[in-house]
Image (tube, rainbow, N blue to C red):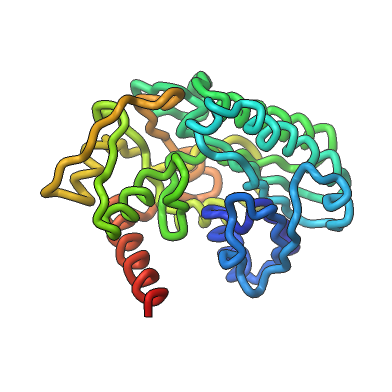
Length: 301
């Protein structure tokens, strides 16, 4: 199987790319390295430096059995401050990619967001839950879903929408505004204070990146919209105590566009392609922290 992974040098994309390669698939990665890192690219993958908005590059890519579309602007806070850039990446970029891949793919897996697209959720959200985007990022991802679904129908291509909850794990960029676990781990290792935005009572569904990669593998050949999460909510205060049980955080004003509660029901994914999260957050944090500590030690030697 030939697979094109856009954003394959990024946190989630490179983990998925490695999973495809382990399965024996031939992987091509397209990434402009705006947030992705060249060292993330697996040795066995073909790499093309380029942007999804660049028609000349897309047209030269050739045909693929699967397009795994993970190139995106992923920060809610950034999207509030820079809505045009977010729209450029998450809407126009998706349209450009698809229009230049007509007749060249059999299935598209589109990385969407369950962590933002539903808005504030009092209960655990299934795929039937009403969408209520509260940031440009969430709105543009929801629009991207509709674009992909419509395009796939018109071009007789399978469309798979994966709505991720809050993904964490080794390789997540700690230098941006999203990915609180990565940011806090970096601060802990560098003996810096950790910041909580808001009162710390906001709840998220944290899913381990290796579990997300497995969802991408198992969903090949399936169509529809699927939540990818654990179904378990963890407050920011609780998360902080897992990492720094004997210390206090610094609290600052809540950021615009962030929802208060988001937990996903992934029972549809379990029913259709037998996926479920295997990693408890306590174990995922321990694994990530251990690997990150070892990585830093090796880099310093």
